[in-house]
Length: 426
Image (cartoon, rainbow, N blue to C red; front, side, top):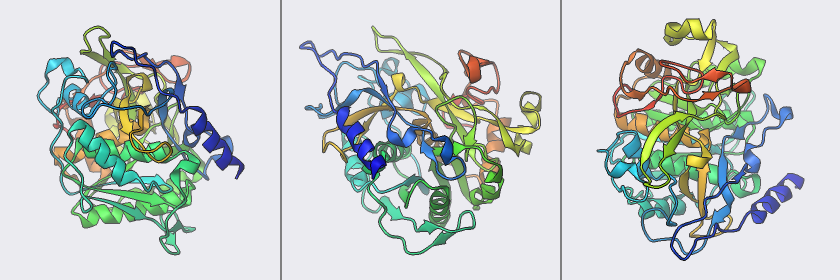
């Protein structure tokens, strides 16, 4: 109960809205809040996972949002339409200014399953509000479903007991995590069936069970993606969990983390590791200028996972070990996105969110809408690594311990092969 009380007090302490002047220009937030779910505890290694989430500003915005477009005027944080513009998923226009562009992705098929811990009872209502705000194709009770996973068993990926409703996500700080996962997977592939599979807790065993449930749902829908925005410090026994991510017809994607280094399950050779980038926007015009690395994004070589064959092309960089990330997308909270979440402060509450917890579902949606539906993550990654087009090669910035890794031409430890550019090569 001590952890529960601390989480609630922390959330209550940040409930101040950013000031907006009489001229409609907002004060740019400069503070980053790390929710309880994203705090890394060394004692959790091999036992529990954390989210990879960072929230901008002194707190959520709750006062009188606009009825369409960005909920509050004067900011340059990203929207579904501006991300689609930047990544050339729609026809680029108006400098990809998030306050001007409105064309959203309209593709996707089969299924995406987002796996998270705990229960967000407002997930569907918030997804409806988010979609209406930005003009994204509306979800329906049949196109979006919440599925409770049972508790995990002793064998990695096994499940035991009944699938009961998990504890409330807000108690543990997982509520905004679930919202960003659901909303940006849906925004990038609004015609795909979307499942939110909720584990009983953030213990590895429970989330592994939830991945099994998610895999079966996606496979039954004819294939698709499983998105995992969480992870934990690598541990020697992690390779025993790698087979969990091998269901035929399912591509698994996981966030690489918001600190230098490597986390699991993104280190698994059976998972597409999604890292983070920064989007530079002209403060005066609102136009997108270029994409560079995000210094806090996870990356490096795995301690326990050997180099998979699809990375033989980069053996001189990674040696004998698995290198991450494979792909990257916007994750810097200073270039974050709008997320609706009403679980703590009620309807009309908006957060500005970053972290590789944003990048993973965004890329999962893009991969789904690309329509290749490869039979496995390894097949998807073979496609990614041999394709000379379809990605923005990030060549500016650095990352890693002591900022010692650099974004360079081709694959690198900061951004992998780069960020999505159209639907080709995915």
